Image (cartoon, rainbow, N blue to C red; front, side, top):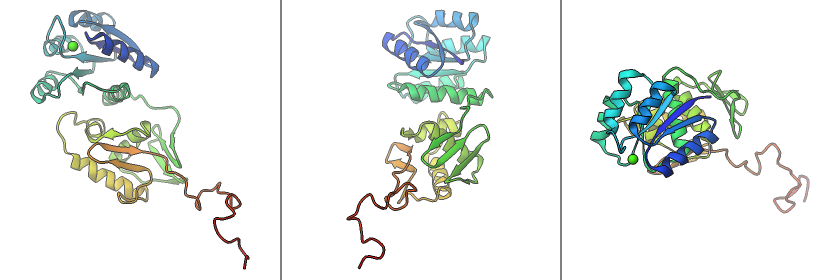
Amino acid sequence: MTSILVVEDDDGIRTGLQRGLRERGFAVATAAAGLPGLELVLREPPEVVLLDLGLPDVDGLTLISMIRAASRVPIIVITAQDDDPTMVRALDGGADDYVVKPFGTEQVAARVRAVLRRGGREVVPATPLRVGRLVVDERARTASLDGAPLDLSRKEFDLLALLASRAGEVVTKRELLAEVWQQAYGGSDRTVDVHLSWLRRKLGESAAEPRYLLSVRGVGVRLVAPEPGPETGPDADPDADPDAGPAPGSP
Ligand code: CA
């Protein structure tokens, strides 16, 4: 079980993260201030640290360098403001990624999985993910649609696997850049757009007529199982609607 240390002085955020991450199968320890957090890093080394920058006892940026002096544990910074200079300093100072408040637990869990992947510690689902008739097997790094294998590039596969792991949820382009391209800061939406269009082509759809990959304008993209069409579904019952059309052989 992956162990996470949450260093956050806000009681609501700390306990909310603890509960939400435990529900997702992580072991979670917490500290309400920086120095107790540092002590835990040294005494019971976690696999990932979630670190609030605004702490009562020690500045978060200082704490990052204190942790880095002793440990290479991945650090994900939690911050209240999407403040570029602060984020650059945090990342330059040794943080691996960041999330901006308010955030959902699933987003944080995805960031945790991403930093672990980057560290070479794969957290891969044991069974293939299924979204409609799309199957994504992260262990084998293969994907198929309607039983036919998809020939995907490395990035296309990473993109599809991430979207499948969060099927039904809107994933922002920023998150895709951070997790698929490891560009936690900076990077261009255009990179994401281009790969999405390639992926769409391989899924046999287009932005104008999407089935699996739905764009959410100005936000990101969502992978969904398409509604089966009335005439194409394998389970379609020709007798279900007698008014739908003339029966074969009728006058
Ligand atoms: Ca705080």
